[in-house]
Structures are given as structure tokens and as C-alpha cells.
Amino acid sequence: MSTITNTASADLELCDELVQITSNTISFEVAEILITKYVNCPSTVVGGTLRFCIEISNPSTTAINNVILRDALDPRLQYVPGSFTINGVPATPSVVGNVLSYNIGTIPPLSTVVACFRVRVLSQ
Image: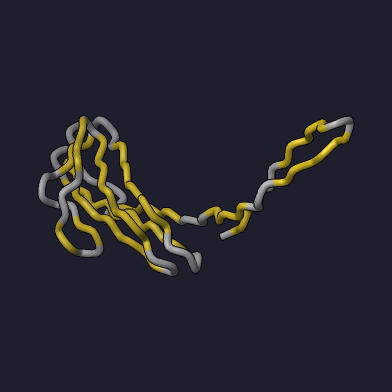
């Protein structure tokens, strides 16, 4: 995680004097987030199922808030309802077309969230 700071200033002319007014300095952190996606099997057949897992890691010492996972599946794949888990706990994603979305919320410092789900292969 890196920190960025920013200060604004304005130059004003008052009574033939140039005055510079400086704002307060704001500091904010830019989060590092690591995402790894893997599949349980390197090949399958039409009609077969695959299990995808996505690891979202927060290696920083600050919590990352408002994390939303989105995964756009290949059109030849179909999400298997009821197969979605977060850290092994059943959960229900939003599925619109071939896009799965899930509001993870907050990932604590030095933590990893693992989302897993199954898909069916519809065609080659």
C-alpha cells in the first residue's frame, strides 16, 4: 500500500498584494489487491463441470472496503446455481447474463477471501 498526499493552493490579489492561501493536506492510501483465478481441471468435455476459485488478497495493513467481485464468464459456460461459496460458506451471487457479482464488503488487513463456484460447459 502506498500513501499519496495532496495540498491545494490559491493565489489572490488583495490591495495590490499577492496572497497565497494553502489548504490542509489530505493523505490517502492506494490499496494493493491481488487477484488469482484458478480452475480445478485443465480440460473437460461438453456437458462437464469445472470449479473456478478466485482469491482476492489484501496484503496491506489497512482494510479494503466496498469490494465487489464481478466475473464475466465465457458465453460457452453456464453458472451452476447453488454452487457459489465465499471462504467455504454458501452464498448467493447476482447473475445477470453471464456475469456473476457478489458484494464481498470489507477485506481485513493481511487477509484473503476465496470465492468458488461451478460452471457447466455448454459448447466447444
